[in-house]
Length: 118
Image 1: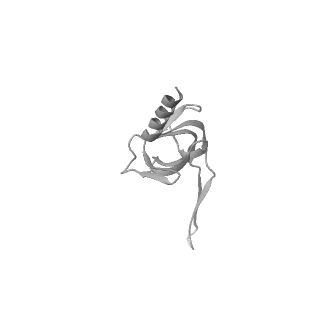
Image 2: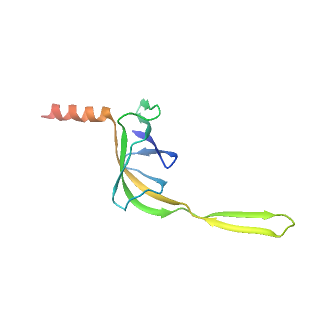
Image 3: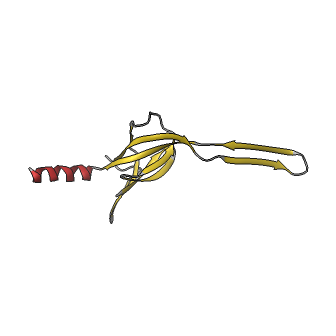
């Protein structure tokens, strides 16, 4: 089961038990974060696409760390003019471990499982 969530103006594919690097988020390491803008959920051959988001769906995760990506070199030059500028940039990101992807269907299945066990 995986989901496509939207955060920081970008869309990311997330799975339970895996981490994803997203745009910098507020919060300390080991704090929880919830992505409620779920665009699509795929569970085997079943899929659910939102318009624009899937209703009552969310992905819950834990912030692992804040870090910076590899440096990108930006070099500008004008030929025959002696103009040269070299700059670097490191984009900050947050690594998030996805703990659970929740939908209304999964809540109903969990409730049914509890009633059958009891």
